[in-house]
Image (cartoon, rainbow, N blue to C red; front, side):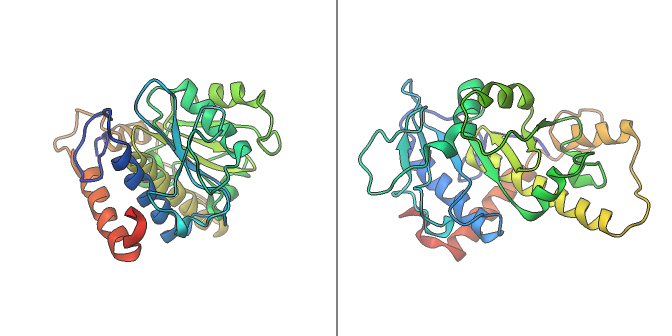
Length: 264
C-alpha cells in the first residue's frame, strides 16, 4: 500500500496555503479517532500539525481537555516555542510540545507529529529488543523505526537534538520506557502509522506472553514486505496503491458516526 499525503476526502496532494479550516477538521478527527481506539492518556500526550506559511505556527490540543472534547474550533494555535499566538480560553502545556517542536523544526515532511502512551506501546518500549517483525503489520516498520533512550520527563530542551538524531528520517520512533511516536505529511498519515504501530505492539505483547518460541521470517522477506507496505516495491505482480486512502475515508465515516461534533 503506497504511502500518500492524504486529505480528509481520501485524495492525495501537498498541503497548500489557506487550508487552516481543513487542517483543523482533520486534526480534530484524529483526536477523536485516537480516543475511539483507546489510545489516550487522559489529558496527556499530544497530536500537533504544522500550518502552511512562513510563520511556523502549529495546532495542538487545549491542555486540560480530554481527546473526546477536542473540536476543530478549540484547537490552539501556537508558535515553535509552544506559546499561543491567538487568544484562547484554554491553556497550552509548553512542556508537552518539547518533543513535537524539535521534530517539526528538523523535518520538513513532519507536518503532523503524534505521540501516545498506550499499554502495548509502553510495554514494547520497555523490551530490550524493541519491535520484532513477528507479523505482517509490524513489518511495515522493519528497519524504518527509530529508538530514543529515556532521559526523564521531556522538560529539557537539550534533549531535542538527541530526539531528532534518533528519529532520523524514519516515519516512527519508540521512546524507550515512554511510548510511541509517528510523523506524517498529514494528520491522516500520522494516525494510520500510529494505528498500525500500536497494533504491532499489541501483537508482540500477546505473542511473547504465550511463552513459546517465536517464528521470525528471514530478513529478506521482512524487507520485501516493508517495501510492499510502504509503496517502495515495484517487483510484485500486483500493486495496492489505494489502500490507505480507502482506510482514511472509512475512518472519517466512523468519526462522523461516533463523534459528529468534531468539526464544530
